[in-house]
Amino acid sequence: MLNAKQQIADHRVIPTQVKNKALVAQRRRQIVDASVNLFIEKGFHKTTTRQIAKASGISIGSLYEYIATKEDVLYLVCDAIHAEIERGVADALKRARNGRNPLAEVIREYFMVCHRMNDHILLIYQETQSLPNKYQRAVLENEIRITGIFTGVLAGLIESGDLPRISPRQLDLVAHNISVLGHMWTFRRWFLANHYSIDEYIDFQTRSILGMCRENAG
Image 1 (cartoon, one colour):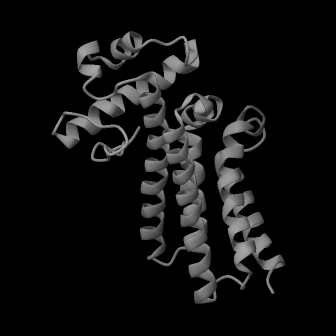
Image 2 (cartoon, rainbow, N blue to C red; image 1 turned 90 degrees about the vertical axis):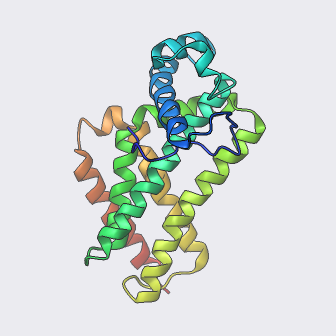
C-alpha cells in the first residue's frame, strides 16, 4: 500500500479533469489495488472497467474521471511500483546519514519493496506488452531511472573511499544486477521463500554485490 500523500501517476501521462491532486492520488491508489487482484484472478484482457469500478468502490462514471482505459490502469500499476521504490530508496539514504552503509540500506529497501509488491511486479512483467507504445517507453524510462539511483549510490561510495574503484561500465553492470536480483525474489519466490527468509536473501545478495565490487576493483 502506498503512502497516502504519494501521487502514483504522472498527470502529464494520464490526464484528469479533477483538480484536487490528493483526491486523484487516493482514487488512483484504490483503482490500482483493486485492479491488481482482478487482473491476476481474471486476466487483464477479460477484466472490464465496470468490474474495476465495482472492486474499487466507486461508480463507473467516477472511474472515468481518473482513467480512460484499462491500459491506463496497467500503467498506473507500473507507476505505483516505481514511486514506491523511489520513496523507499529516499528513506534508505536518510537512514544512511546516521552512519549506516548507504548501499546496504538501499538494497534492503529495494528488495523489501519487491517483496511487498510481489503481485504488482509479476503482473507488469506478464502484461507490459499490453501497454500502448507511449506507456511502454515511460515504463522503460522509469526502470532506467531506478537503476540510475543505484548507480549514483555506488558512485558516491567509490568517491568516498567506502568501495574500491571500478570502471563506469562495471558500475552500471552492478547497478543492473541489483535491479534484477530484487526482481528475482519476485519471480522465484515460489522456490526461494521455502529455503530463505527475505532477510536471509537480502543479507546474502548484499554480500555478493559488495564482493562483486571488490573482485572487479582495478
